[in-house]
Image (tube, rainbow, N blue to C red; front, side, top):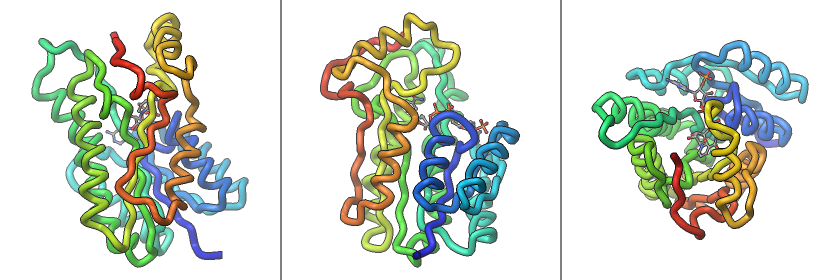
Length: 246
Ligand SMILES: NC(=O)c1ccc[n+]([C@@H]2O[C@H](COP(=O)([O-])OP(=O)(O)OC[C@H]3O[C@@H](n4cnc5c(N)ncnc54)[C@H](OP(=O)(O)O)[C@@H]3O)[C@@H](O)[C@H]2O)c1
């Protein structure tokens, strides 16, 4: 079988963890990136190895200059090549409009937009050799914004556009797509009533799961004639209405 090696950022917990485990179940070796969640990352690695796949764990603060390039280099040193890059690590800061300051923008853009770009830039040659692909994890708010998270929403809107720009730049050797989740795993500090209201507000009338997002990533990783696409996994949120998110 042709080698299938993936790097997944933010893979220790929640959505990124599910993506890493789905890929491993489908036969991919996985480089698991984490930031603070080293122990959960090691547990994910154990699960991946139990599936018979290779795994390495790399910790990095991707909001720092050069961290993205160093993460790609470490992955290539360990695996000798790369067929898939999944950028899932992100921050999600709630802040009302009048309280937004430069730091909110810097944090949102550094991790949610700039780091994915530099990951792709560094991985480009290896991905091209492998005729591989990139999946960026955006957000349904990139299409249909919600309130009180302006720097985050704008960062995801820019990441969504980066998908199309990079698809053009990297064709024909590397495909670039994105997955845009709606409400899948709400922030841990969100009240149960707010979660229920959000889930009920979409046409499918329920929240999605991390596995729904992972399945979409896996699909795009092997969809050989698709590039520049954003696959929304949002229960129909973006075709319904603008909802409150406060
Ligand atoms: N959950 C949802 O319902 C939902 C909805 C729409 C879009 N999304 C998008 O889907 C992706 C995954 O969502 P999620 O809810 O699983 O995300 P999350 O729990 O908020 O964070 C994902 C990961 O980002 C990593 N991270 C945070 N700061 C970092 C830094 N400075 N450097 C490197 N990594 C850092 C964390 O790693 P450590 O834990 O190791 O620190 C964490 O595991 C994100 O891109 C998110 O925007 C999620």
